[in-house]
Length: 367
Image (cartoon, rainbow, N blue to C red):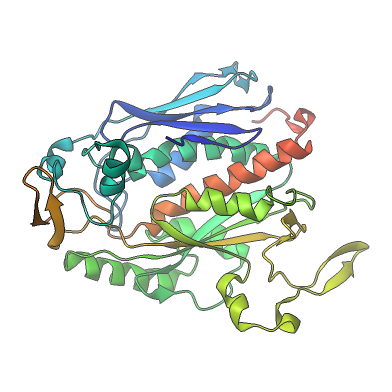
């Protein structure tokens, strides 16, 4: 089972949705990085359920524990083990689907591959697995900040309601965490929430688009041919449950452009060579240009819905109908935002370490 990610900064998540705990082991973090549980908790608090009507009502505090790799407030160079105990686990709601694979979930494919499936909310395939990703991503963000790199994310579209203009980085910083949809445009956020909740009242769910950006990324990250930066980013994003498509820069809009429209003119700015526009999304030939990296993720509707759905009863060997009961997210996008940020941060920190651009002498004391 592929639970490992990264080359120099290596991440292994562990745990199941309704098991005792979830978490992550992070190997490759250099010694000397100031790290406290509060640094990790800030990011985990953004991901945890039960915060608004557009997220699962499952109640979890998601309190992180650093089990190894830190001494006197700094990393030792040994593997970090970060754990979060499951406090709100309640597998009873899934008793009804023990023998009935849920449509849209990984139940069927896990069964076909492994011969059995953890029916308690999907086990490893549950969104609960992303706790470890976000904790590791918090470490990666600290590494990136030493080089002046910032990762930002927001919901661009949900339930058919989309932000139809260019959003500034400032708007993401100021607005995304101030509404349940994590949308950078407050008015659009209100309409998104209304559309999501209307579908939820009908027993259904909705999908959307999440955008993540990295600003301050130095040029030269990524290696041709198979280790392209955008290839690693696409791998990272497609590994997130519910993500079905990834775009970088103009993405699918390139299909409707001419070369004269798609190319970013190369210019000099204050003695530095750069591009006039950023349609490539900060990456050319698999290597970072030095402009912001822009990635968009298409997130499918939450597969857990209360409407009747066709499936097969494995015990009886006959077709049947299942109506799910439990604690579901009516739209995944708001909680995918911190996960996508974490995965982008992990890719960039990994490439910065591979390139030798993260010297520990940049890490000073923090107040």
